[in-house]
Amino acid sequence: MRKLWAPWRMDYITREKDENCIFCRAGQEKKDETNYVVLRGKNCLTMLNIFPYNNGHLMIAPYRHLSEIENLRNEEIQELMTTSQLMVKLLKKVMKPEGFNIGINLGRAGGAGIVDHLHLHIVPRWEGDTNYMPVISETKVISQALKQTYRQFKEELSRMGF
Ligand SMILES: [Zn+2]
Image 1 (spheres, rainbow, N blue to C red):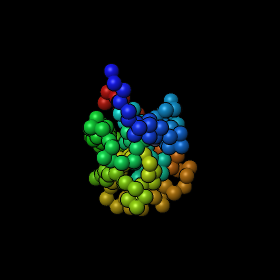
Image 2: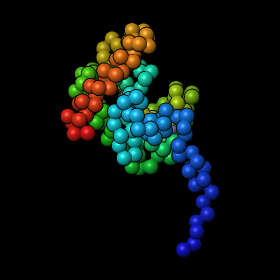
Image 3: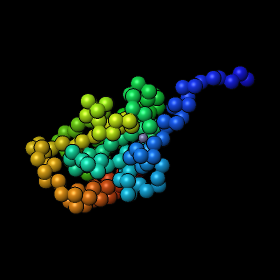
Image 4: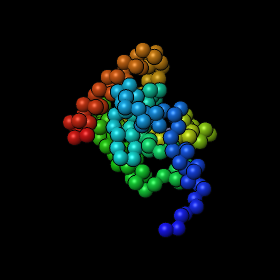
């Protein structure tokens, strides 16, 4: 069989994982509780944002370290969306939000905190919740809230069969 010369594969292979990236690290490490990973799928993982816009703020990221939405594979796109549905279901059960923000920030100018590894945000919203950040601005309060939220999510997910 003729060997295919594909130099672009090299860039893809070396960029597959980045040790300094929180999504890659959470994907590789087997410390889901410490990393607040609530769910591992086939192509994506879901974790709590430790700098949340709101309590229950989740991020879904493909395992692959990539920044461009055009480079997502169909199965990754599909799983990002089906996981979003599942997480909305979870959030509705646990937190009874009145609305959601779901979105992807691309590029620094687009507001992405982690530019190199694409991720989808799911932020539960309540009427009049814009004052949430000042309330949780104390780190200790955040980490307690995170641990509690993590436990609640894991319990509900296991009840849901995940
Ligand atoms: Zn990464």
